[in-house]
Length: 165
Image (cartoon, rainbow, N blue to C red; front, side, top):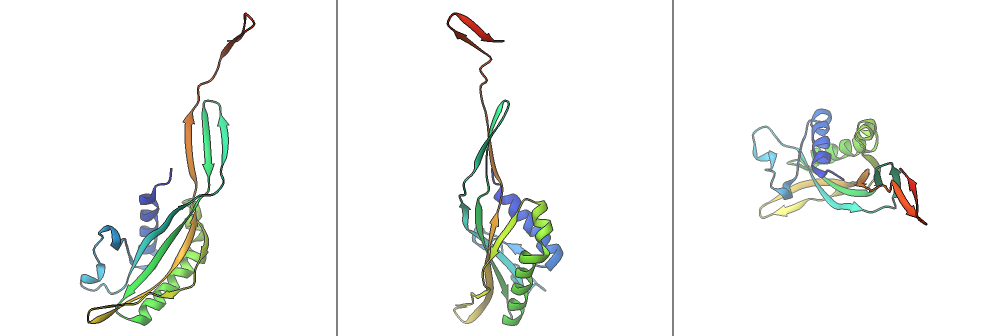
């Protein structure tokens, strides 16, 4: 089973450590960090395609039947900043982290970056000012495993003869 909260927390910790930015989910009620003193730039994320199925396989492990698949998901990443230049710079740094610098860390956490889209200007006008936003999408491959216990047949009656234990 995929744990989306674990994925978000895995990314949140490393983005803070490596890039020094807050990593928030604005659509789920996280507050905007730029409303606090001394915080100008932050990164918002959203699972725009949380599960894109891929063909899987079954494996029988004595008492269990395992179904394993490697679905992909699309994570939209948007950098917010009061300065368009800072938003562009941080978006480029974030894209390089996803595409190159973070590869080993992500792999250790069973997250594989399949692709990243082009960086896009996502700026919007809010009543009296522009909200500078720059971002891109990352396609991530994960492991999704389901396990089901199976009942083993230990003996069978066949033609009045018992086979098995």
